[in-house]
Image 1 (cartoon, rainbow, N blue to C red):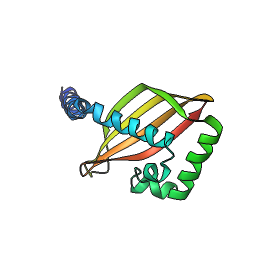
Image 2 (tube, rainbow, N blue to C red):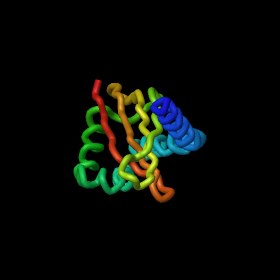
Image 3 (tube, rainbow, N blue to C red):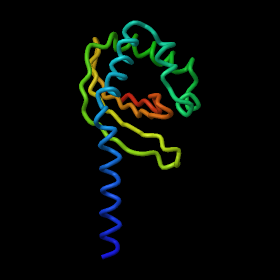
Length: 136
């Protein structure tokens, strides 16, 4: 009986944490819209500044900008994107940062990809924790 009670509390805690974050889902999805608008306008420096500290440790700002430029040469301008999945979770490190994972089908002038963004909400700011393009 004790295991069932612990599991119930864990599920309630997970649902409670997720609900508040989901209510403002549009705010985070608009963040991705802003990403693609800046991509089309060649504002790569702005996009690179959207990354959090761990993202910029994994890849330098210059490397990321080069990746964006190369993607533009190969795929062309972004035409549209549609949300495939949305997951809300909490970071285990104890920092209290909220983590949101959004996966999109993205259509460019010269092809399609699936792209996954892991966003972190920390100290009231949204930042990209990781970005993974899956070329199709």
